[in-house]
Amino acid sequence: MTPVADRIAHNIATDIGARAEQVIATVAMLDGGDTVPFVARYRKEATGGLDDAQLRRLAERLDYLRDLEKGNCYDNAAVETFFKTIKAELIWRRSWQTRRDAELAIFQYINGFYNPRRRHSALGWKSPVAFERKVA
Image 1 (tube, one colour):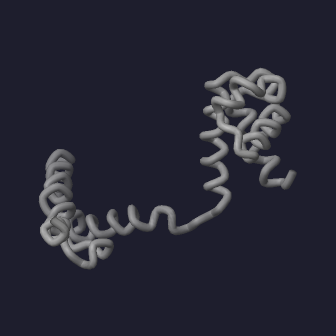
Image 2 (cartoon, one colour):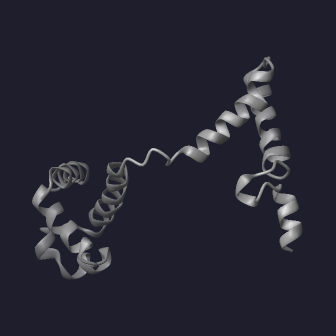
């Protein structure tokens, strides 16, 4: 087992209240193509008696921690671009009297302009409204 896999197994074991050996055995079965329901029903001896809820939590944590280990720095690129755009086009252009005023302006910006009318690169630089008209 690699140091990364060992660290993930120990992290999951702590999280779900199990022993690392139980997690390692379960991960091997899941990686081998077994499903959580199958493991819960037919592989209790191998998992050391982990119940369905623990197995589901284990599978979720395993996916999450493996994704983190990939270290893909572009995962949040779309969201960060959106926040930069909303700050540059709305937030930084004026002062707000109250938090409620800012929240209302942000809501109106997103639902009144950004989502329906703003051009998006993913749509070939067309607005969603124009894109839908063309597709329909």
